[in-house]
Image (cartoon, rainbow, N blue to C red; front, top):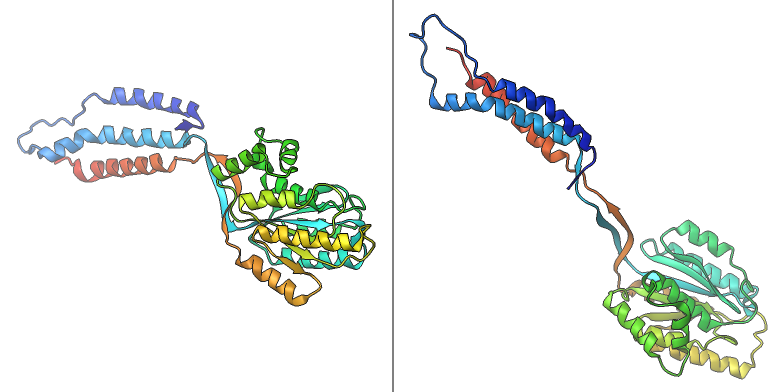
Amino acid sequence: MTIASPWLLLLLIPFGLLYFFWRERKFIGYSSLYHVKEPERLKRIAARLHKPVFFGAVFFLITAITCPQTRYFKEETVLRGREIILSIDTSFSMTGTAIETIKKIVGDFIKKRPNDLLGITIFGTDAALIVIPTMETQLLEKSLERIQASQVGYQTATGEGIFTSIIALFEKEMGKKFTIKDLRNSINKEYLADYAISFVKEMEKRNVLKNKLIILFTDGIYNIGISPDRPLRLLKRMGIKAYVVAVKASDVTGVDPEVAAQHIEELKEAVESTGGKYFNAENFEEVAKFYDEIDRTEKDKIVIDTVSKKKDLYLYPTIAGLLFLLVSIFIENFWIRIP
């Protein structure tokens, strides 16, 4: 326990001195005690208790105004929901109707998720985090409005977009123990390296893998960066689902049609290996199924904020002081009588 205003305890000094001087017995003299009855034993005890009880009330009330407090403790603001990263393809092939279709679907999705933490990443030749996971709907909507095709390059690095989304989900937990560069290098192999495995185990130990999702909004065709199956393999190992809402490319992709078809099929298989699904944004029924699928995803506790704070304890000495004061008044006015 700590005291916010310890200097107020100095008020106890004059009352302590006053109590010391009041300890002298006082009485009312009579010329004769013949008609004075000896007070009952309980009343004699009550009469002796009056001053200690009164000064006890003073002590507790002075203690109350010094504002006693607990030591700092952490208080979490939590809710039950999901943490979702919306990763949007902004490559050149998304110019025109494709990017507008995606922005409409994402905008509707944001409005339907009042209790979920949503973040936004974009990817083209490079990938970037636009909004960290938040519940600020207006911030998400305004950020979505500013997203344009070719914003981070003309090519399509789907794998980088997925990896950036993973970092957006776990950057707070990475701390100094894990680095983005080393984690990227450890997944960009034919198998998950020990570094990536240790990252997964650490996240499992911290119990931070639940209720997290990554949703890609893309035409499914990639032509640069790490292969999407590499970060998706990491997601599978962590038990995190990835979903794709696919649109038809509205401009040239720079990829041979056969290769593009193969890339789409490979992305679909890798996404489904995580337990997620591949939806066609051109089909209204499939988009409706996409919303329903996310709604069925299990919710879990999300820590929104952690605040270090103190709890005031002045109420307890205040109540004790008032009780002592009431007892003192009762003794003085009902128990101490002069015959």
